[in-house]
Length: 484
DNA sequence: TGAAATGTTGGGGCG
DNA sequence: ACGCCCCAACATTTC
Image (cartoon, rainbow, N blue to C red; front, side):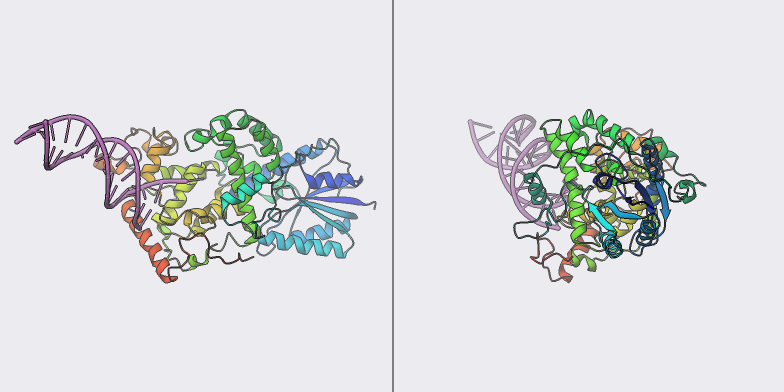
């Protein structure tokens, strides 16, 4: 069999600005594109329900893009280390290309695979594609990883600007004989019965083409008022590019370049800083591999979380009695997405009002978000909980009524997702229980009193400070090196 | 990328 | 005219 190049797609389901693809083509040999559904490698967290739904569409779109260029996508299932090694041997690949990922379990697996391939005489090449600034490229003056966002992002902005995106190739040389491929339908990534994904399908179009279209629409539209409108969940004021970025249908370089081309403004800087948080999250998870499972600040290991399954269930279903919280949770279930401002509110409610471990919320988001990303999800949850790097102080407790009044003043967002409350006027919609007997009967009363819950949360935090000897719980750093 | 409690100030009503 | 009280509006601090 003549030599081939194997191109392993992972979270980079695009043809444009794909360094692994470009490199695979440069050998001038036929390229075999493959995607591996790996639900078996220990430590790798399998995709959640909403992500699986998206993945189906994204793989379908990628296959179509490849076919329009004379190629196709080979689908395989199993532990990636074994599947790629065997496929490389079976199809006579002399090189394997992929784009790097950064969480601990994936880094370990990829390192093992690279060693195995190298041992068999196959050139294994990984590439930078998913980040603007890779974890090793950016360090403090002391050569340490950053633990605080602002200096991290300042260092990034002072570094060389990201390179221009690579063009999509026009033609991809195909092998004479294609290796066997699974049928996508056989993977059953989309729900059948019950089909809970109708709301997702109504809202989203997975794939590189839709991603590019959405990016262009955003930079030509909502980006102009992003600084203010991004905080108003009733508006389409955010980019909604997160799932395209999570699956790599868009590269951060493409997004960066599109936004940068708009000229300097406060809105543009705010938006680029959101890309910065994405970079920071991946920086953290690279240097702190189990960020999604363990408190970044070890003193939080002693935090007195409560086990309250009924409350957790009410939170998941959007039945807490706090309209802004419930609207967010129902938006999440219906569409696979939640507005960022509301993510902070519901996360604060779970961890502080209900005193439930952030990992329970992280798991729920993982299962329900179409943009679920290990690094972003863990960083966000730990940030809200106060256990993370550069986290907000624990005593910063969101008041769901005030947040609702401030960011959904007309109540339109609540009305959209809570039909029970659709008839209420703006002045009570964020606290319907104050209507007494006139409150809607089919909407639950608050499952906790926020004022009391806040006191309870502050007391829990104080107990933590005392238990750990009162050290380093409010300070910026204990001076210790990061675990890695 | 807070909220609540506490402190300060200044204007108006009133004796 | 003046001091006093009240309280809204704003500032500061504390959690």
